[in-house]
Image (tube, rainbow over all chains, first blue to last red; front, side, top):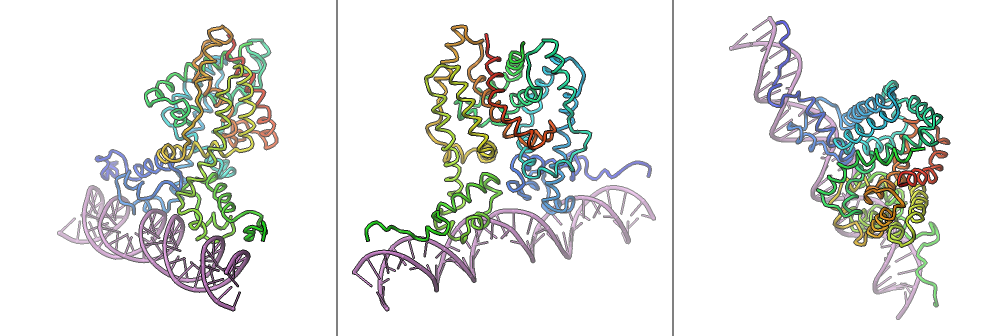
Length: 211
Length: 211
DNA sequence: CCTTGTCTTAACCAAATAGTTAAACTGAAT
DNA sequence: ATTCAGTTTAACTATTTGGTTAAGACAAGG
């Protein structure tokens, strides 16, 4: 009776029921919000009975809360790691853009979800997240100021530079449906356009901060 | 009996019931979205009986549709006018940035509303809500290509330039709560930061497209 | 004053949806 | 095989919520 643990049907879906529920809930909550996602829908996507949602996660609110926490706590450390590293600024910016665009293109709805959630409960956030996970942009700020002092880049407030970079990375993906409307692009053209963003953003940013 | 028209209780709230309903609905829909806003809540905010909502606007969907149309149609024509004008490119970009940031800073929730709802209910938006006369960016595109040909700006796809400009204008306001979290700014500092955006974006963009 | 059309309300209805329960299933330990 | 704990389901209940209805208020005109 050593360690042959609860194998309980781990074969069919390869994942535990609890996890399948959580994944389904995450997808739907992130895409449709608390009110837009329905419990039955979540159950269907997880391929289980609706009662199991309540068996594992007492209520819709609780389930949503756990999802929100997980999403936030997964998103921030990744950014933090990039922003706080000590590698040379130019290289760091290039890596950041590549990585960030890659990340968002695979998780289109996450930024909007976090922003919406942050707007709903501005204070709850600081209880939700591990304090250590909060990105500390000081390293980045110092690097920018050093490069400015050396004359390698033009004077610019580091805060503006950081936000500008993030804006250029995030916005086109978040506003994806608008591309179709405003630029009149087909689905294929939209994908082509978004694929070009990594290089485009890097060119744009580096040109914008040249001395 | 000259011109003493239907005064019908225009005194108490100074506004017609129909208008009060519409205003309440706009506030709540913009803030909470279609699913998040409840009819009873709208009625309460308007200070009237719930049945009146259906008396004036048949259903929730219809009411939402009218609100969404109004919100969008207040924003787009102005943009359109700017984008389609024939004034010199540099001047046009500067005016666009000034105007756009001004507009957004006074209606912070509108872009978020449009983007969120567009992502949640793309069909409804494209079929019923969006106006037929969207901004036509062709003039802008042509101007950019001309300036590139003349060697006044560096080569860049006009679509990317347009999206970059919009991204730099919109994103910081949409992501306002993130500023506090990521940059660690106080409310006063956030306002200061956002006030600097007009000049910052113009500098950044013009520098980025220099030959 | 009485009628008429517009506006407004309280009470009600029906559908959707969150949540509960009791029973059945399952696999493992006794 | 029996028990037992954890898991799962179908059927059910309770609540929320969009929508309706019938009756009343109310001004304006006859």
